[in-house]
Structure formats: C-alpha cells, structure tokens
Image (cartoon, rainbow, N blue to C red; front, side, top):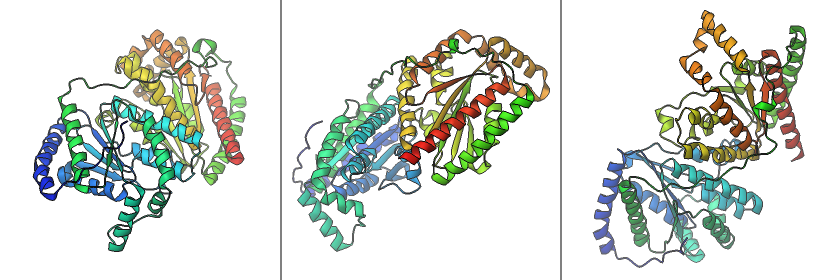
Length: 491
C-alpha cells in the first residue's frame, strides 16, 4: 500500500474540461459491464467524511444511476446487531453485471469499532481475518473490488465539519463527531487494518482530499481504468486460498458403525419425550436471552434427515424456527459468491435456522459430480471455517450432524420408496446415480469431516435405526444449546 497521493490544486476550468471525457468512459464501461459475468464493488472509506459523501454523490451523477446500486453504512442498528457483523454487507453483494457503491464499508466499521474501544487488539485481528476472507471470496467469484481511502488532516476535517454545521448542510451523527475527536487513535488503527487488507488483487487507493475537484477526478479516473482493464481481461487474476489443515481428532466414517442396535418403541418414546421437553425449555430460555441457533443436518440420501429434523421442530414454537432445504443454486444465487445464499438465511438472535443439507454441498455433491472446479471446492474449506467461526464468535449455538447409513440399509429404503406411492416422490434418478459413486462420496465426506471440524465439531450419527438416529440428533442439539446458554451466563 502506497502513501496517500498528494492532491494538487485544480482549477474549475481544468476540471470542467476533463469531466466530460471521464463521464463518457465510465458510462461506456458501465454499459459493457451489463453484458458481462462479473460485478463491481467500490468502497469509499477514510476520515474525509464530507469528501467521501461528496464522491458518493458525484459517482451517482457520472454513472447511469438507474443501473447503479449503492449503500451507505453507519453504526449497526439494533436489528443488525442480532446478526454477525458482516451479515449486513453480505446482504448487499450485487449480482453480475452491476456496480455497487459502498460508503463506509466493512473496513471502516472495523476501524471505528477498535478506535472506540468496542474491540480489543485480539478481536480486531480476528475481524481482519474475516475481512480478508470476505474480499477473497468476492474476487474469487469474479468481482472487481476497487477500494478507496480518502484522507485529510485533522485540522481540515474539523474545519469542514464546522463549516457544514453552520450551513446546516450535513446531518452529523454522534459517531462522526467522535471520529474527528479521536483522529490520532483512528489513524493508527487504520494503518494497521489497511496494511493487512492491501492485496494485489484488491489494493487500496489512498488519496488526499484537500482539493475537491482533484479528488473527485482522481477517483473517477482510477475507477475507469480499473473497469477498462477488467473488461479487457479474458482470465482475471485469481486470489489464492488459505489451506485448512486436517483435524487429527475429527471423526471418520470408518470409525462409526451405522448399524446401531434397534430401540424398542416404548424406550424410544420415553427418551424422545424427555429430550423434547428439555429442548422446549431450552429454546424458551434461548429466546428470552436472545441466543440464536444454527442446526446443520447432512447425510446420505435416505438417511432420515427429514425425520430427525421433524423430531427437533416438534419441540419448538413454529414462529421460532425456519427450515431451509438446500437444493442446487438458482440463477440469482449463481450470480453471487457461493456463501451469499447461506448468509441470507441466518436467524436473528433468539431464533433458529435448520439446514436440511447446507453449504457443505460444495465439498460433497459439487466436488464429486464436477459442478465445482477443484480450486473452488478446495477454497470452500477455508470459506466454511471462516463462516462458522463468525457464527460462534457472534454467540450462536451451532450443531452439525452427518447421518451415516450402510449401503444395505440405504438400498432397502430406496426400494421402499420406489414401491410406496406416497414415498415415491422422495426417490429420484439422481439418488441412484449418487449411490453408484459411494466410494468417491466417502472420500469427500472424510475430507470434509477432517477439514471442517475446527470451529464447530462434526457429529457422525449411526442412522440404520431411525429411532436411534433421531434421539442422537435431539441429544446433540440439547447438549449444544445447554453449553451455549452456560457460556452466555459466564460472559
């Protein structure tokens, strides 16, 4: 990252002479982008509060604003605080062919929170890692990420604030006044964060903003060149991905016998009722305390995922949970980074999201069936680990189960579905094809278990006996929720 580029004094005549050509270049690039398969994300951050908003407005004027997406973020609202801190940014990720302008992005949020003492150094380091992974995922999915840091000295900033206040031309929030007062502290935090997030595939453009005309023209020029260069590329540079080590203590399928002893109906009914009663009480406490939960149920085809989920939901008020049966992504989801559709399905604190299959599709079916290239599914291990770390850091109770059935029991269930009219809809040609690839799927599952048990451990559930499997899932969910509530009390 280079030092801030010094502004030069630009006359009105020179500015007005150069703007028309720049606007034409930006509009042409925007028009060509509409037919291309990647989005553009532009972030405008830095202590030049008034100047940043000025650039934001100017870019709306220079581009065709009808086809421009934009968002300006201040302190998180009470509703946004019920989700992990990156949730609100994931929700505005644009589809291919569009431009998003972000005023006060995820970078500014991290810097401000540390400057005001809401994060300590260790927490800031964790947040930086999450920012790095977010930006890597955006660029890996094809996005052009252009980041601007607009800088002015403290005296200039305070002078502009005073002038704007006297003219009633700017609605200052308390946080913005505080930024001006904590200028030196914020500058040191900013240097640290910018240095850590300055990547060759997403560099920072640091510009001084004393001269409004020069600053606006420089932002527009850098953006036009970046757009033109990206549009001219046939194979854009891809960021590398972080390798996730295998966890030595992670379970393996071979270590779990799916043929657990069958339970008698009476014994099953008694244990189920006891566990559901405990779970009901726990979910009420979790709702009262604002504790959210994310439950992931994976497993072989016909392993009993739906039945296990129903035994969990029977113990909850229907308003408290949502079930997401995950299928192949639709066109809207394909036009954004892989994890986008899962971020959007997170529950607010106090609620529960249940995933019948999940983000693990990339390292399972997409890997085995060839729907994801090897770099994509290998990168997914780090994406998943980072995502689940954020869930845990935010305070969610997270449970992951893989329901393991033997080949013989799976075949028996397939044949039962085939021969039973009201179950036939559950069986597809794809299920039979997947069964023929049991070996490759076992290898993919074992690697998944080994590489994604760091933030949240996996529970491999013997599922040949449905009653045993349902109780195991119920017991696991109860245990995870009890421990999460205990941690919450201690914090």
